[in-house]
Length: 84
Image (cartoon, rainbow, N blue to C red; front, side, top):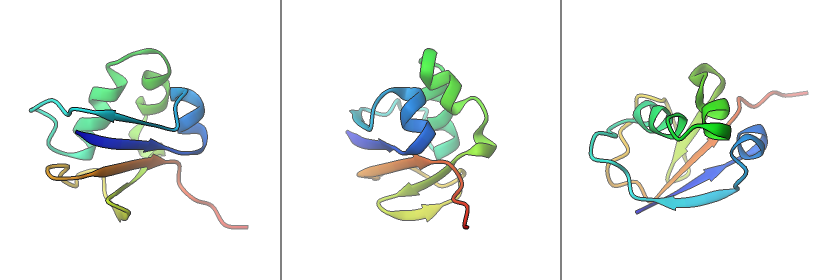
């Protein structure tokens, strides 16, 4: 079981701040996870339909979407951060 955290507009689209899920065996990378989440439809499809708009962290470490998820306890998805 892994905790998935959603921030900013990702949270707004999904309708949750976090959830715990059991990852399917074919989910190897964060990109796989994003595709699986998008396949749930509705707000998930809206949030994860364009992965270039996503950033992620695994166990509070920023990683690329090709990072492996095996053994992760916490995965966070959020939009790119802009300064100002």
